[in-house]
Image (cartoon, rainbow, N blue to C red):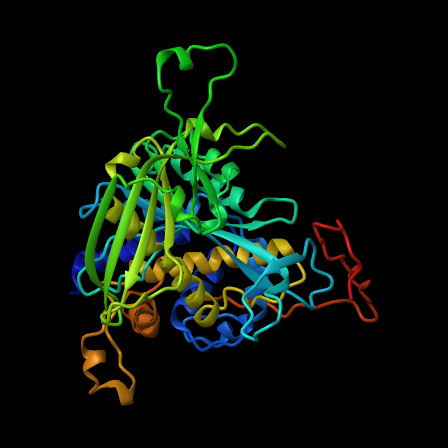
Length: 471
């Protein structure tokens, strides 16, 4: 339902966003509006053809080049509009990494071999380009609003000499240590994929007592039970105290002991399919630590291990392999097995965000030879998505002509795609803080006969071989 308060909040957010642009604020504000209202642009320069962008196409690249932005500025901008958790007792954060393919950008610095899904069977799922780590808030479901929304908080490029999972941990640590954000003094849960379950990543966030990390585990991991001495004489002997007990191999059911918690329930997917979910949980499971390059004593941090098996309506397995999750942190006992499973299930909304950003907002389509300019573009697209989230209660459903009489369209929840489809009308209705352009003179351009030197070609960084020559 459209209310005056939602419209006022959107206007206030836009005014604050406009004031945080130090250079070329008018151009940047209109560029963000163009990203929000033009889902059909095929290149960044085509945003200059959007009605709300009143300047020439050349100003787009000048504004991006002169843009200055702090990593935590986006999180501080959206903080006043975040709704306190009501259905759960914690803030839910999510981190993930997505690639930007720049295979033919031979003059772009710091390109490396990164993972990218390949639709052709048998081909390697890799490409040459950059990786970006994004962290966002996974909000609770709202009435008449699609549950696939996220609230982007931070984004940063992962350099070739950095660990992508540790960059996500740094973003979580930055959000929890900033006194201007509401996460540091609250119960928080962060969810991530299996690559974030390695000891270094889990250990890097354990200085936050109120943070619980939920990650997926690969099905071939070997864990351990906590060692329990049979008598006091065994525990008080000389030498180092034993910490690890019996093996708990995920592939070997014979090594499992009786679960501490078991629950079975039915759930309905977003497509209407009904599944029966069977969950088992084991408390105080340990993970082997590391000694190099730094000592990581993981025996100090027991966690809850969760196994999830789903069956379809006919009683057959919905997935070939069970889903294994871990929940680590001092507050992990505040979550039962079902809450751990449901919290991790919302992590997939990050995938929806990346898909929408790349298909409808040109998140990974900025072809520039400057890595810094590319990073600023990713910041701008995250800002544009945050503005779409702010407009979720103001937008109307605008069906296409062939969708008007479809029952599914009449009952469709407001998704980012529908808000982007209606954002042009919203801009015309509420106006923009950006001032109209004031042409002054025609630039003289470069002197006649001037020739710029060619850009140097950069080498592709391959971690196993350090460097390789460009093709």
